[in-house]
Image 1 (tube, rainbow, N blue to C red):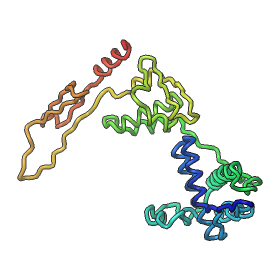
Image 2: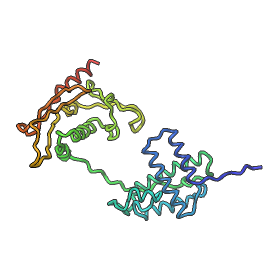
Image 3: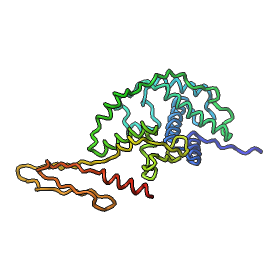
Image 4: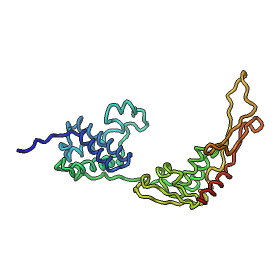
Length: 288
């Protein structure tokens, strides 16, 4: 006597697949892309093709879905109605514009991985993605920045502000070492070896999940923060008066390392030189 087989709907198998992805320790960005693609496809199957189970999906179903993607505009179809309320896509500038071929190819790739997994685990007998191929995409050559454009870009940063000096150094560091933005933005102090002018990229942050070492030039090292400007802005009127002076203290590990006095004589503005502090740090690093 054959055992009765319980049929599972799309929602169940998508959840199971996401558990599988988490067990394989895929990156969060990858899993978000997978789930978003599958939830959109699940809703389209239910509303447009009256399909509720992966077993019911045929090759023609996939082709009809691809045609639907090509015909409908961006952000006009959602996985749930809550998405439309939360993100309000109608306010986007590119709302209802044509979905790019690159985006559709990403959907095809994500669906292929999902159905390959279903076939491998004997959930479906025939894989509907077997004959589906990526769409031909006319890629345009990227426009590179000229040296003059790059100089103009770097010249726009006001390095007296910490955030702009940070971004300035990050751009120099990525250009010099070849690091990706995600790798550069997740650096820790322990990753940087100033004495050897190298940076150790951790496997959990690199694209290939392998430890990698990159080097930077002395010119990039000089771009480190060597000064900071402090300025006091007063919000006073005729009924109030500003104080005679303000004392600003710069702390490192709870210890005062720099002190500045702001008053009317220096226009409530002073630049603190941190070069000596940087040299002391280098000496400590070299001796460790």
